[in-house]
Image (tube, rainbow, N blue to C red; front, side, top):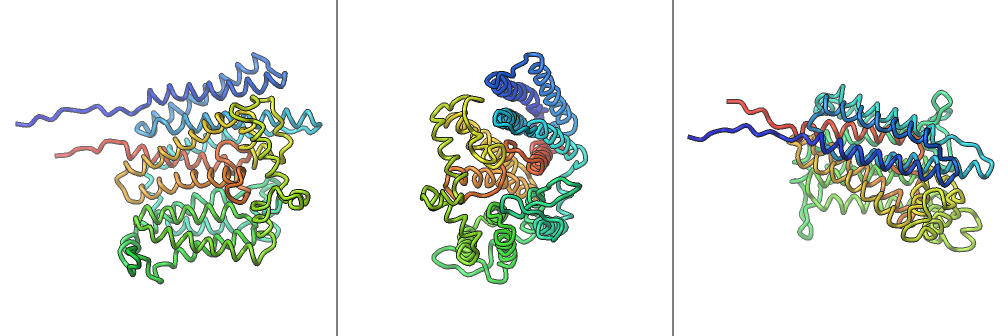
Length: 447
């Protein structure tokens, strides 16, 4: 006669607590180095900062232990470590600007956005007890994403900053709705694909050993392609269009396991990008600054000045960097936001920058591990889509700064200065925590 023994499933909360302590130590050490090299180090103030980070980490830990006890134990520590490094670097830029006679308080503002983002993530795991409820709002999420994407084009509401029309003004504050639109589109894509993946995966002609989609099944892909091109042309935002289209193609591949969708998607985007660069001067100027950044005429016109300065800054950092607070990242425009990767590359060197990218790899890996472990098709696509959103955004930003691809205006998740990005990416963390909690939770066995 077989016997059944109870198996105690490990939630990983103790390991999470230890990793949170390490993340807090990284954040406090980075802050201390910045203050020390700026001759602004006060041990009492640093102790208060350390106590504040400790309280935040404990609140997150206790909230997860209470409302999502089986959630992934590695995700939040990796995010907090990145967040702490970003806050230290932004504070370092405040000191650098002050030396040049420009008073800024980017560090304090970003700290407030961080706390609001953490609160939003905790609110998600408190109120959203079952992520599958989101599937009911598949088309509503698609509509909200499309509205958010096109809001900056509304006269009187949208505003143009640094040549890109991706902002709206709300109560005198700038908001980037595209950061939240990407999450709404991921929900829409997940809901649509889980309902139509059989048709997309099995129907269509076979060419050169690969099954290609039927023309009538390409409607969603064509719609997203058109929206991406519209963003690129009228909002002058190559980054968001690439991010949106990349997320959809990646989720299509996950849903159908058909390489033909990737080939068709990349081909459509390439054709659209070439046409946009040929027909519209502002798009073509981005390509020129990318391909001919070091040409004297292009640099003197200012088209590639920011990019070249960032490249030289990272080159001066070498393998181990100049040290936090000992470089000159303030010579690069918008070093606290668009080019914070170049700032970190200069002061932390290639070694430090690789460590930061490793943290991103860990975050994306945990999202994909959640997608593998979840037992619901919608959850698999949702977790994979959120992971791809972070991965693609990091690739677009780092690729632009290092001149692998054309430069865009996207922000680096959890590092760069910006409230919209911070809130949206912490919202992604909250969703991943909820999905991973249900994915890792043991099934209840009944007779």
